[in-house]
Length: 481
Figure 1 (tube, rainbow, N blue to C red):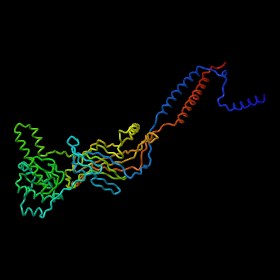
Figure 2 (figure 1 turned 90 degrees about the horizontal axis):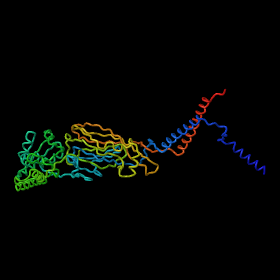
Figure 3 (figure 1 turned 180 degrees about the vertical axis):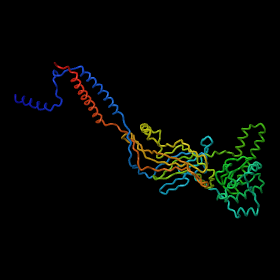
Figure 4 (figure 1 turned 120 degrees about the vertical axis):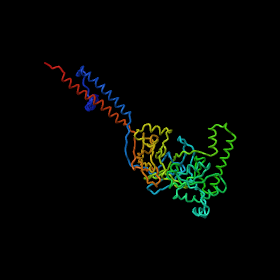
């Protein structure tokens, strides 16, 4: 029995020998006022540090890293919405070129055009997935010179000194504004002479004239001639919009003139019935209705998206037409970028997108920095060129895919480029995709890091203030005599 008791005491004594936290008998300790003050200080310091560390643990940090872009998709979506301030939708062409040899002219797929009024509101839908129809021309056995020799000149040649008086003298006038070098004008010239001859033969009260815009460039500039040929109808010296843009055959042109005359007769009959009692505003609206006068503001909104290769390239908006040669001297490419972005459109209605973007830093939200920016040119023969560097960006606001999204940011530099007098300018958007991607990741502290810091706070504070207390106790301890 005694052996068992002695054996138990031996094992307990052996276990106690490895005790790191040995007790000091209470009667060997001494409580002092200085120790109490240091204990209160220790508790205050540990409390403040504990709260600070807990707040730091609850708070997350944003870490930004750069890595190789691992996106293997061959194409990227380019979204755009651009308003051309002084270019009619009939002449707007969206072209794409890239380093792989892609060269697409007048892209119509996924592209919409809207004619705007003077207030910037959408007025007329001008096409989606629609190619411009080629107008028909008459074939003639004789050249224009041969017609003049055989039948005389019927279409009146006009210049700056005669134009205004002539269109006022003729109640109805139809004018061809042309350039001798224009291929479409050359095709139209004998047809226009035949039109003038037939109008005269039928006794139609319509003056048929023409203006050489190379010789009389100032006149054509004053008349805002943007393309050749421009076939414009005048009534009592006033240009009636829109310009004629249908088939350029004698039959079609004569039919157009007859319709104009018929509508004018109907207006005169209506005006005669109304007499002097009709309101002037009502009369003016009725007159424009019968004349089919629809003033056009040369402004066009082009919007949609393009699927472009992930290589350096550009898309550009150029003044171009299948049925006209553009007047370089009157081509103004001033524009407003309403929206420009890369990748799938960011849906602000998506809860996932809202949640991620709310957490992402503002400096990593350069998804469309060109939005609502005006690019205006003060003179002709110049246009803005835009140079864009695109960087894919991964926003990882959590470990699950519900908190992650991939988008594209870009930086832009714009400058005015000057063109030769005979070249038609273009608004160019050159892009280049970076081989690197930016990763924005939300990071928080690990729980074991937090516990380690708490232990360090408690132990460090206790030890440090204990050393201070011991030092102060020795300094201020009363000396024994």
